[in-house]
Amino acid sequence: MRVQAKVMGRAAMVALVLFGGERVLSTTTHRPGAAAVAARPDGRPARWPGRHRRPTTTTVAPTVTPTTAAPTTTVSPSTVSPTTVAPSTVAPTTSTTAKATTTTAAATTTTTVKATTTTAAATTTTAAPGSGRFATLAPGSPLPSGAACAARVKTAAEQRPQNATYNATKGTRANTDYPRVDGQYVGTTDQILQWTACKWGVDEDVVRAQIAVESWWSMLAVGDNGESFGLGQVRVPYHQSAFVDDNAKRSSAYNVDYTYAVFRSCYEGELTWLNTVEHVGTYAAGDVWGCLGVWFSGRWHTPAAEGYIAKVQDYLAQRVWTTPGFQG
Image (tube, rainbow, N blue to C red; front, side, top):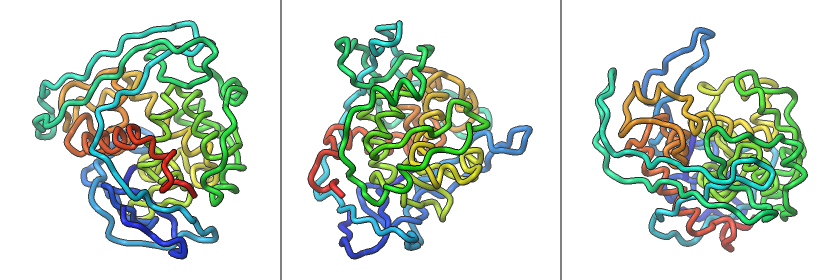
């Protein structure tokens, strides 16, 4: 699932992905699996292993040539926390998110890793009525429909022209694992990220920052030895339902719709298996950063997860999507 500033020329004719502060060609092995994966009764994986080794192979992305320039500067990782709010259309207006613990819990099947960093807990504030900003909704909050969110998305210019075909393609059917996932939206790349943030109750700037880390906002990005695809770098072996009809490859909206359905499941406290594998502290609902780290590492606040969290926080602090080097 995830990745990262070596400057590539516009004539490079390849899609770009981010990994550890360096830009690399798409179709790279930026996060190969490193552990056995438990299967559910239906045969699909119930969890995913870490994927944090550096790329070793490259393949040119077909048909469309991205022109994205690499960012020219980076800053030290920030400890910025996303804002947790309830929008004016949702009844709850405040919530309290428990700070992730730093106590090391004993894993039943693997060695417990000692905590090496401390992740800031999300704050709780209330947005001004009618502000139109999509912010993180507390666990248990009612989530708006895709149609309601489509009506609230703000106008945004396209920064990735190479995404045009994917951005104009809707999903073909609802996802079997997450029925709310349908990819029923078209727009510019930023508008699709706004729509997803609204639909899954995630801070819109956190979404923008994470997708920059994952794919530099390019649907052409392919990683993990050809296993991970698109804006959110959805990985085939562990998320097979996303690839029915090639939806996660063909549709930008479907790709990130699925990505943040998984985030929301974690944020609601549903991934209890995280406490049965290598972890730091105790997995529980309401930890934004912990759940972002899970998307990359498949583990709870381990060093690999913390490194990924720091990169997302860095891009969030920079608002990297607004910098000159990000423009397509």
